[in-house]
Length: 71
Image (cartoon, rainbow, N blue to C red; front, side):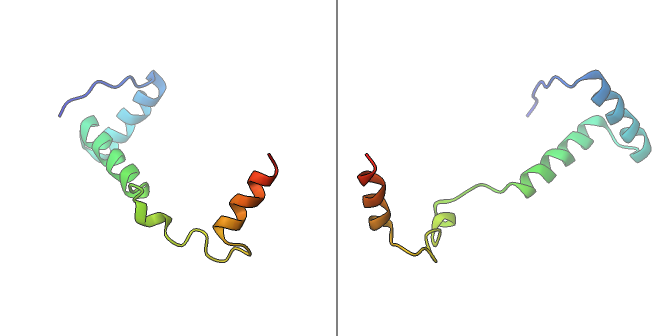
């Protein structure tokens, strides 16, 4: 799929320097950078929330009651 992206001139110049050193195209560098970004930031799933409350001194319902008492 093709997309249009605005890249500042100074970043584009650095990208071209890197492209020349590596002997690859701009597109390949950008695809690699996007792939690396996505690997470092996997999607969040509902399962990721399980156990978030573990280790708290009070249970979730008591926490809600305390917050509502502040109203």
